[in-house]
View 1 (tube, rainbow over the protein chains, first blue to last red):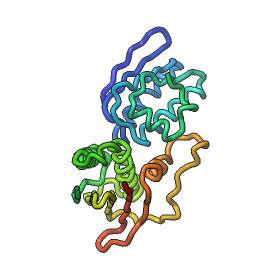
View 2: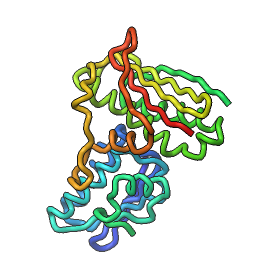
View 3: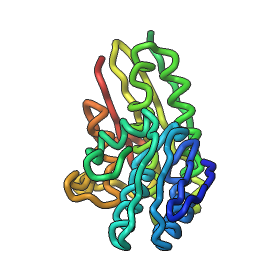
View 4: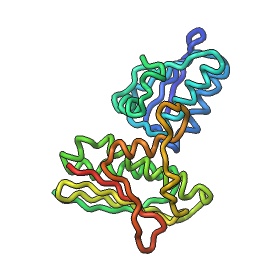
Length: 99
Length: 136
């Protein structure tokens, strides 16, 4: 997994890529959580994420819930087909913010 | 087309990528399996992850290997997982309720959604032998 972060006003856009599994979730959390704690609106761009397992889905849930707790928002952008399939299998398409 | 392939993997999170590559290479050999490759790879990776996360929870520095055997015969896919970690108590294997949204507890649910049957069997020399099957 590699990443790029861009900032525009209060919006931080995190571009993730590669495969997000249990081995990569800590790195993903260390990247995303401080942005949420700083009350940034976070856009997670998942266009180049080819694979995500239940550990990756847990990061999405945790990010979403943390954002709600601190009064901000996490939005998933340009979700790749394979990641969307997993989100839908977990029936999270109505829970997470998808665009 | 009949396929039987087996490989040993170190029991750690770094191996999960190797597990997925092993599975993808096999599924690419059969048009039937290739059409469901993403889901099948996810099921295999989740089961391997459960070994690392649960069977070796208290033994993260292990040098043990886990073995994964994939066979496809007569349009039936069978995937075996063998490990020498803490014996699994099947009664404790439950996925969380989907409407109780929280991190974790989805791996087993994904496996059950993707495969037809998920059972533990006895296997000499191993502590756990999980078998996933799917008919085509």
